[in-house]
Length: 131
Image 1 (cartoon, rainbow, N blue to C red):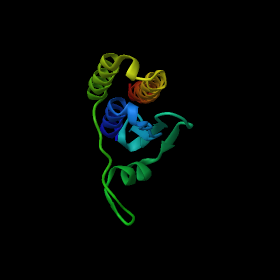
Image 2: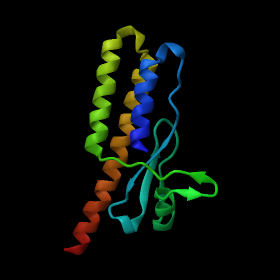
Image 3: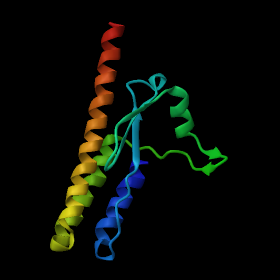
Image 4: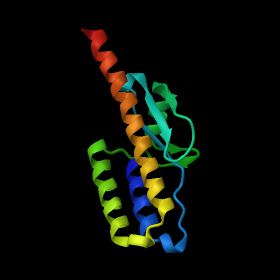
């Protein structure tokens, strides 16, 4: 899912002159441990949400009815690499990379950072409870 967002951002930057719009997609991360489910956020607008374990597993697995593929996951380090490439592409495009697109890239980055902060805090609390 984050891979999809990264490629959509790249495509949006490269085809900015064609007025490609960046979709508001949901990104999710493990809520401290797999058994706790997931925390999710939308890349542009919307309130954060939580999934219990059953919802999280359903989200991750491919579904037959209605048909949809499995969730695509990547590490936060790999997401950062893609974000860096997108920012570099935007710099090379100069004025062709609209201010709005730069703002959307920043907003997506802030949403991902916020999501990571929430799940890391949950992980810390779980670790402290085990001590």
